[in-house]
Amino acid sequence: MISVLILTKNEEQDLPSCLASVKWSDDVHVFDSFSTDKTVEVARAAGAHVTQRRFDGYASQRNAGLREVNYKNPWLLILDADEQIPAGAEVQLLAEVAQAPAAVSALRLRRRDYLYNTWLKHAQISPFYIRLVRQGKAHYHREINEVLLVDGEIADSAVLFNHYPFSKGMTHWVTKHNQYATMEAQRWIEEHQQNISFSLRDALFHKDFSHRRYHQKGLFYKLPGRPLIKWLYMVVGRRAFLDGYAGLTYATLQAIYEYFIVLKTDEFLRSKTH
Image (cartoon, rainbow, N blue to C red; front, side):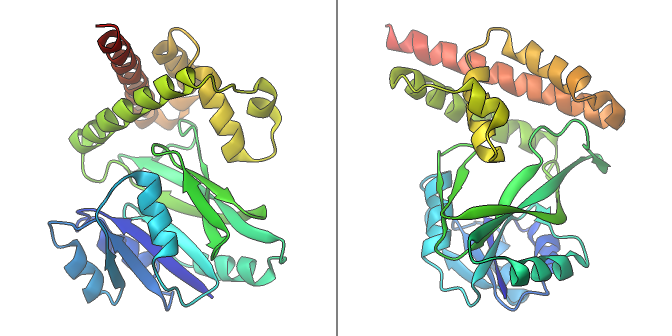
């Protein structure tokens, strides 16, 4: 009843655990961006179907994964290689899709991010993600921190799944977020050039979590002193200190990431004036 889509690029380290966590599915697909390590071999050894496509953007790659693969089942579970479905959770997932009304086209799951084997229960800013969709009922937009748009209603799942963003080490996380910061800065400039407006009402009260986050982020990017605001929000507002050293470390890394975006935005704006 549920097929699985896993997007990969050089994921030989994390992919085995991800694949093991979805071995209950009879239709697992790895959508690979021409990895240069043993990702494809690992996938095929585990019995997964492999499709390869040149990477040309985060949203476009994910949309290709939704469109260009022949899935066996009507529902599709979307995962990254550093994510895992806990043992036994598939029973709840299968029950939820079996009981989903026809109007429901997607299920939103809660993700648990880990650092140093510590669940960032308080520090994690965005724990809710649409990861289970009916085929043909969803597509992505925005190239960074992609948003999944759904044709139909979205229901909340009782399932929690796990994410290990630091599995490849701190250097990998910083390098990846340095790239993300460049893309976020470019997006910030494009939104201001297009005079895109953001709604405080939607940021606070819209029923869809992804829609709220979109407007929250747009409004947040207009504020001065964002790195400090973000650190205080995470440590004090969300009580990241309750996650111990891992929580404080994560809050500091997120503030540094925000500062990268500020620096790169300023750099792009200066380059346009010369």
